[in-house]
Length: 109
Length: 114
Image (cartoon, rainbow over all chains, first blue to last red):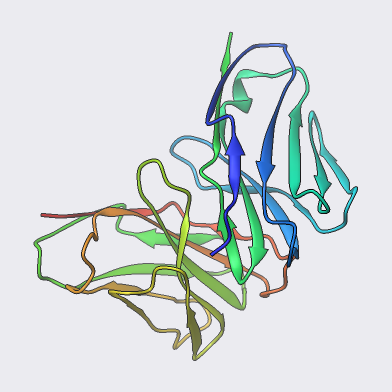
């Protein structure tokens, strides 16, 4: 079983500020790294799927980077808005997806 | 409207009883998955199916069983052998089982066994 770690566990950010958090995964036997956003009372939704070292993906104010050699990915949110409040999950694909525990982000108005 | 449905949203059972959780998708996806979430833990894979009439154990399959007789349906049975069945269960599907295939999740079923 892979060990996927996310930090911090929770984060309070002022509206308008930018923030980032980390996902660490084993760099050996890497296939893909998935990011999902899980809002309260909703289902998790895919944000990004990344496979190549150095890859950077962007969706609106949210972007992610991937370093497969050292085994980490960063998720960035620029100019946080209240609707960004959610739990952000990363998962490493090996034999199925192995998820981290998530980063719970709260945007304070 | 395409998506994944899970029913019921809340389920209560007595200890010792088997219970089946429903998962249906109309996305025409080949692959389907069952995850379990416990407080303070990440999602853990119970079973997955890459194609009809085929399924594989995930990381925590003991005490669970599944079937995949139809492409759109992947029911999960929580048997009396599952020692800690109380949890939140999520079903997901993906177009295929490739490493880059993002998963689409249902709303989940919260199972409480007393």
